[in-house]
Length: 445
Image (cartoon, one colour):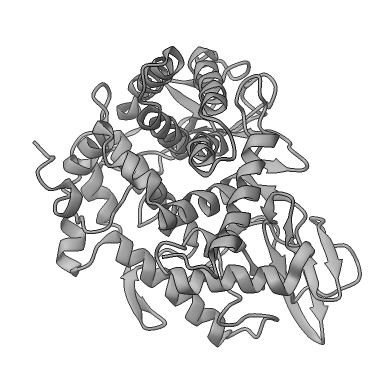
């Protein structure tokens, strides 16, 4: 648990990260920006993180319950009333799903972005968090619960189930349903739980087995676990679902739970950074973390006599047989893993904060990423700032801010977990996926 030494630091990180969602979100419709300070569009997943942030803000004393109720109701009401249909423009979604990116002002589909199953699921996890949190008799609380319920029940998950059981990644008006689905262990655990838990349009029972049958169990840096290279895949589902002590058929065979799996993935990443096989600058026991993030940009340059290939936004990560590493460290990788490996993760956040100061930590907490190998004087293709220490991003990303705030809160109070352990839809989805033991024992029909 947090100590007198770590409490003030975690207070600061949470307060600043919360302010990202509270201050940058459009107060007229609840749409949170994909990134800041240059918000090109809203991310519906970031809206889900914003909805999750508001209860944390109340509990931490950043905002009042009345303020959180008002913002939450505005958000849910807008998304319920926003136009849905198969027209390629002027729509916010279709069949209850939402487009990945939305215009910050109108909520309309942004350019040719896809109808996204996973981003809709992330939004709905935020909506269901609000449904659980606002449990009083106030008329706005009652409306929040009703809108959240209606938004979830409206989604036609079964339309997105592919032959064989997997859930498709999305749909476009001009292409139809994508013929590839979420497979292999990744962030889609929460998607499958919600799709299985629906009382109106659920996927059939083949979905979970189809998903878990594609897992890749490997040993990486001494840790046996279901591998997935970017850490976000080991974090997103755990933000809302407490996997401690509960197991599905796959994990019963392995003798662990998904929480332990994520702990191993986190510590394996730290071991990789300590080993630093490609000799990138700055890596070490307390400077690590590889997940999807910004980067200097797509370019190949010579640094200190060695040719290096850098990437822009990229699903960075490290796993057995899958190394996606260009020297970029991502603070949310450690921040989103605080409950799994608190000593290692908090030490990393504190070290990065102390060592790189204002270059890495600003008004809204940690900037998205940094790369100490990129020490060239010229500006990299994707911007940011170059310093004698290296390259530092100057943007915050909503989907990277959310895990930092929520997972630190889960470590400190377990608040989001405790709320969602009571959600009937999450419980039904876990039961249909075959989970048993721990807190879910006796809750499955």
